[in-house]
Structure formats: C-alpha cells, structure tokens
Length: 257
Ligand code: ADP
Image 1: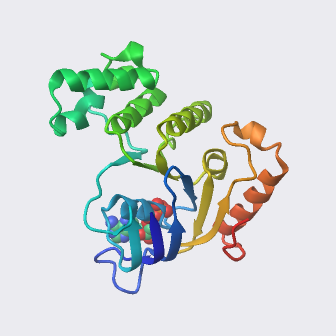
Image 2: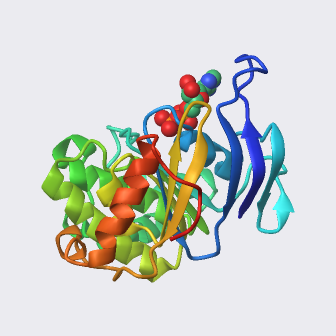
C-alpha cells in the first residue's frame, strides 16, 4: 500500500479546508503500522482511504499495485463502537459476514464456532452480547472480521472503551493473533504506549489539516513483550519523546529514527 503526496478533502467542506495533506506512506505486506495523533488530525481519514471508502483528492493511493478503483475487498474493519447484533449469539454474530457472502448454514456455523474457539470464546458460543464482558464482545468483533480471511486489517481505536488491564490483555491477544495470521494491519490510536507496544512502525500525525510529522521504525525494540518490559529498553524513551514532540506539535523533521 502506498500514499504519495496525498491530500483528502471531504465533500462539502470547501476547497480551502483539506482534512489531510502531504501524506507519504508505504506499508509492506505483513507490517503492523500504528497511527497516532490528537483528535481531528486525520487518523480515521487515512483508514477510510485504505478501505476504499474515501477517494483521495490529490496525489496517489495505490493498493496491491493498483490505483484506487472503488471498494477494496479482503479488508476487515474494527472500530471502538460495539456493532454486534444483540439478538444473535456469539456464533450467529461471527457467522454474519459468511451468511451475507452466501456460505451454507452448516459450514458457516462451523467456521464461526472454530473462530470463536480461536479467540478464546469456545465456552460461550450460544451467549448473547449482553451476557459478555467488554473484552469478550471486542473479541467477537475481531473474530467476525477474521472469519472472512482478510488480507488487510484496519482498526480504529478498537480498545478505547476498555479498562487499562483488559486493554493490555487485548493488545497481547491481538498481537499474537495477527502474527499467526500474517495480516497487514493499520491500527489507529491516540495512546502512544499502545502504538509503541503493538506496532512495527509508528506514524505520528498532527495539525489541522493533518499531516505526518514523523515515522519511526521500531527495529531496535523487542516485539511481543509488554509495555512494562519495553520501558526498560533505553531506545524506548527516545522513540516516546520524539513521537510525543511530534504529536504535541513541537516535532522536528520527518526523519526515520
Ligand atoms: P481523527 O481520526 O484523527 O480524529 P478524522 O480523520 O476523523 O480525525 O478527521 C480529520 C478532519 O476531517 C477533522 O477536521 C474532521 O472534522 C474532518 N472530517 C472527518 N469526517 C468528516 C466528514 N464525513 N465530513 C466532513 N469533514 C470530516
């Protein structure tokens, strides 16, 4: 996936007020990219472009070697909002995209039950969303996306509504799941620690219109370890300080570390 000098304007906002400008970004297959920045700097806008929902107004966006050409397929989109159907069970919710794709009833129920088990909900197949905790509901949402075998996972503040402990558990779970599936992931968050813990690369945005101020590749940090362990690594605080300076509006040039 690549953004080259991309500008995005929302229809009706007027030509003078783009949402994002000068976006240059390359994402390789299998990479886990976290996008951080304050509210309104254009993080979700970047995800909308990745999903094919929003066309760029200037510059080029390429996905799988092609210029944007309408809706992309093979994309899983997870948001902070709980979008489970309250009257359906765990299996029924996870099976929904398979139903819409025309998969036969028995096959889709089996695939959904297998995926529910994979995300640790094997004992809750017939529960309804109201009978599940926040973390369990978020796992169902993730399972509902993974069951479609996406090649690209887009996540917009997926753990924003969870408490601190659950959030860390879900981060660990997500990282392991994504590593196993080999998925390319773009993960939007305004939590810098979350970004440094999860990402292979962190893209820091700021301003209005939003722009990328800094891209850090985290080759010098161990992957798959907790935030507490990461903080012991000296280069962690270097990344943290420089990315923070960028999102808080005092960044230097967008040089990779
Ligand atoms: P973030 O995800 O970083 O909070 P957004 O991408 O949602 O930021 O928004 C970036 C800018 O685009 C903001 O100024 C916001 O008001 C504007 N914007 C977002 N969605 C729309 C829309 N559908 N129509 C018009 N303006 C929008």
